[in-house]
Length: 544
Ligand SMILES: [Zn+2]
Image (cartoon, rainbow, N blue to C red; front, side):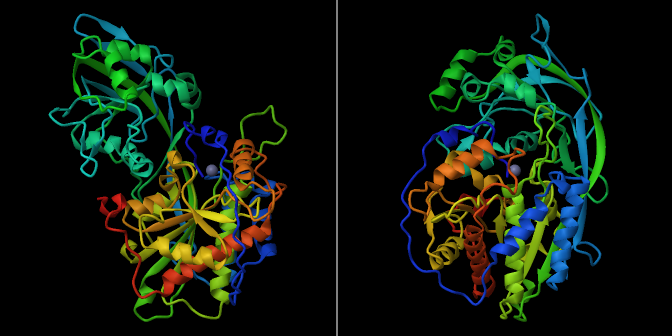
């Protein structure tokens, strides 16, 4: 799971408590998840021996082999490459070369050298080893384009061959999921209009939630991209050879010749307005060198063939990421291993139990079920993205994705939150499945996190596959227990830390309920006559 470091802890300071009062009986299906099986899977996958399952590590390879062995034990068909359970992916890790980044601003009268990393930071290029771009700068507001929301920050501007300068983030009036999607499409909007680089402005508002100093601290992390089978990196916009994130005093210098004062732009941003773009009347030369390294890591895929002659060519896809963030570099701690018990050994355990339930239910589903553990989620949803681009079954035949990521199984949850449920007909299936186990369906308690765009279902959503992703809600069936508090405490104290490990007080009975619901959702989708579809009014029904 990848939470935004910008909003991160803020969400948790809100007290998200409510009273759960669902007390309906579990409907006893013929088949149920087993608490001890969930525990066995989780304890193996989150053991110290797997060393935090970092993408490309030996520990993650062992996790992948374990998952494949379980699939084989269940008699599932291999659905990876060449008749195996594995879809091996090559990745390029890119590092910015020390002291290679430079940013020279030419204002016409003057040449100014910006200081790295004090005034600007930049990442490595996954595409080329040396970049050297000189071009005029054009301010483009937030750099957003959306017909649905009537936005075009590029209207009337010519950015062909130029470097665009944009404010970080997005205006608050956009709904969170749609806003997050548009925010992640900024490079695409710029590239489609011929821009050769992007300079993003840090703003006083952003400084309040994430100081520039913090961005400096995090910028040394390598970037990871998957490689096409031909060895080319998955870099969508090769003409974009320059990028920089500049602090507010560097921004002042970019605006010396601007027709509008930077202070006025900040005021517009703060008021929730969309500032209009203009030529900045300056040019810049950006240079950097990058070093590349290749690693490989597998997705693991298996299929339970459907029973219906026609529908068996369609697939319900379960996904759960098997990777985590590996070993921490903070040597001040005794425990260095980020075990990822909740993130996401628990999701994989739920998926393995779901697979067993389908096999042992005695009734074959009409549609086929695919189980896919994906790698490199923590590096940017990369394993899922690779599969969405190189599916081992036709993507158009994947009717739905049920994603499992970081179910926090630490309390007797009385409700679930189903991200994506308001966008497609899957919402109805989720409500029925949860209802069967006496679990309520709650609204998203932290819309600002835009979680719908933050896990492995999202690359499938972008390809048009309706998806749903369940999280344990913030109410508890246990008297006196505040589910939101337990969840928030996990997030604040254990999320992405060595203490997310099997000695947490894991409630495996809650895991059983969570698994049963996710099984039920897939079972209904697999057997219903009509395939799921996006609701026509959903923004995600019309992505290109
Ligand atoms: Zn995570």
